[in-house]
Image (cartoon, rainbow, N blue to C red):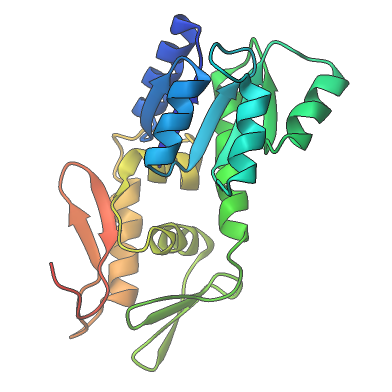
Length: 228
């Protein structure tokens, strides 16, 4: 998951970059709105953590409004010392998805980012198709080669996360943060246990193997018939 931190306070920017990187996010940081606009014009980010009081030709609110006007759909979390109701309403009306007041708890920040990511996924309702597999998150049923496979709640959450990435690699630390919400030690083998359970159900028998391990990184799904 790509995150752009737009923050001119170096200590906060370093704190966010270090903490989020350790949680499996891919993080870039810039100090002013002009640099942020250039980065966002050059590529897409899943999340933007945006301070309000920033140097540059526009402030954080103006940047937020401009991004929404241009159709940028990245989730935006405003991070600021302004804590009045009016300030929050102004930020949300400008196009922000959430608002967090400084000083803040890093655990709360992570929880809010997870909530924003879940909100992104809710925007794509209904069954998910990938290769020869169709998955219905509501019933937790996988349809593959004419067979219907029922997943447990945790198996379903993990499989849905992999499906939402459409074949991209999902790191172990992101799986931990999204599925278990930091409630276990990453050094345990619980992720491997659930991956193996999914393989036994979805990749059983002579089926083409779609759940792949990317050594030292994480896991991804490979569509049937896709080239390596």
